[in-house]
Image (cartoon, rainbow, N blue to C red; front, top):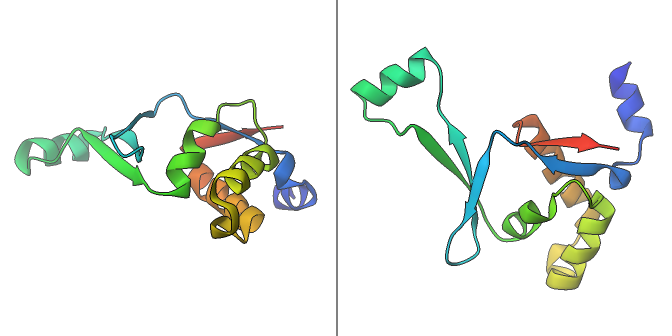
Length: 116
């Protein structure tokens, strides 16, 4: 039933908000890295024995790096899309289907939430 409710909503009206537990940084090229802490028993064992890092960096490139800072809890997906269109032009097409799918992926990974 919840899926049906989501389908009838217009995703362009959704407002993506970055989840606070994930930090992020931009490198000298403007590429964004989302910082994910590897927690839990198995991760601690891997950190000790296999020298795995405590923090994993998830690299966003291109349009993803442009969009990430715009997900501030104030702009809707439509508003973000207009800024992407202004900056990237035809390179971003098909803009809104790609942007909606991208935000769905970020939500599935737990990096953002939607507010309406």
